[in-house]
Amino acid sequence: MKNLLSKLPDNPKLPKRVIYYLCDGEEVSLSVDAIIVSIPVPDWNRDLSPWTAPRVFLDGEDFGGAAAEYLRSIEETTLQTESLFAYKPESRGIAGYSLAGLFAVWALYHSSLFDRAASMSGSLWFDGFTDFMNDHRPVKVPEKLYLSVGEQEKRTKSRRMAQVEACTLRTAEIFRGYGTDVQFEKNPGGHFNNIPERVARGLQWLAL
Image 1 (tube, one colour):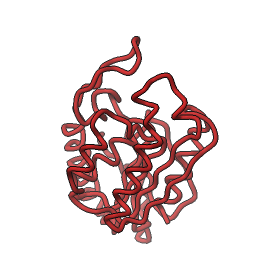
Image 2: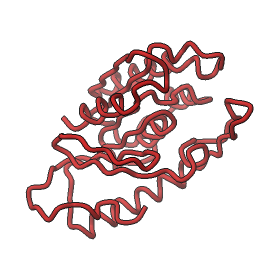
Image 3: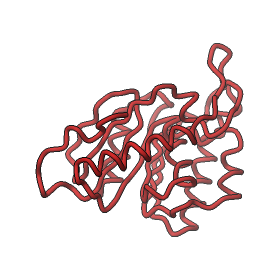
Image 4: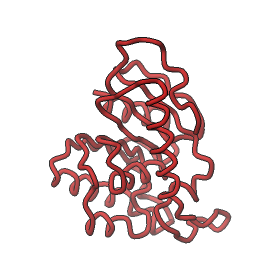
């Protein structure tokens, strides 16, 4: 994760908001008043899971629980890079899809770096995560939180993943209780439908 902002233009009128988007490495190009920085994730099941948990599918991998270590690397690289480019954003957001969406919400409980987050079809069903949110308070209550889920996502054979909509609604309830501006949306289809469009909607709302 070196030189995250290496493509920043030399412009004193840069947007005051930056959003760090965890992804497979794809670039995101949106017409918004914010800088969107794509952060490739080396190992999703290891780096984005807050603690260890068994695999969901027989041919899959167990969750490694290395989110804390990965978050530290994001914080260090982000601050170093912003300092290198003399860029001081007024607001930082963190966003992701699926397991990266879980990480974005979890990061609010362990870092004061971000004041907004977006979890698009986030894996908020993850074992023990709702209990974790019930028992803990974010390090920094975010100003804004975007949550979305596909209408068909709860219709899965996996009992764990089938809880995704209920867990997402509970997440919205918890953060509204803190006074966060929460936007919850249901999208047509299942987990793997229209991913670029869902990501775009979340990032656009976060950039407002």
